[in-house]
Length: 220
Figure 1 (cartoon, one colour):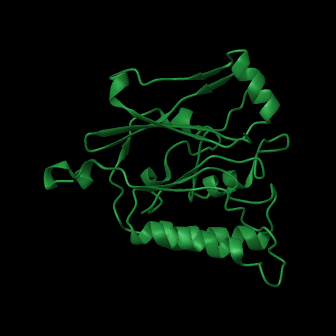
Figure 2 (spheres, helix red, strand yellow):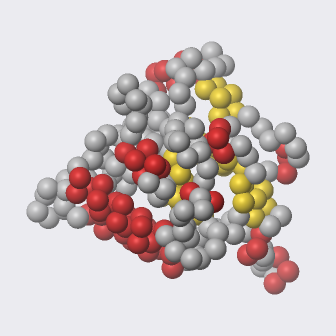
């Protein structure tokens, strides 16, 4: 690259992508018990050292739908340690956040909450290990979301059709449309694609001016 070709940081999204951390896997094993926690700690350290704009998690942050208290405690502790602080967040969200974050009573991105001090936002879909269950349709990510540590997106409430509305982000002149779809049983999702029951919404304005990124968690 010549100097003129290097993107300006003010217009460049720096994203750390991680997936399938499976926190709590073999946590009672004498040798491997801390492996997953060390992994998350390393990911968060890397994000902070490199001053990323946000962390994008592709599902299965937890190994079990109901992680142990120790597992939740360690996860919350690390997220609070690395993702809260005074460093400014340098991108804005242009889409309707009530649509993007529809699983919480606080339907807005955590760094825009006046009661929170977030330096590194975390966006995550759920996987097949930590998917929402029960009459309430809740998962461990929803606990982290309600506490303001993670932005849970990509949760489809309907079993008849899926309409994916992207989180529209802008940093400088760069526009990013972040789509997400949490884990759905493969057979059901396959039938929905075949029957054209899955649709992805596009920005109303300047549709070709957006970079599209889709986060999905399925078996192949």
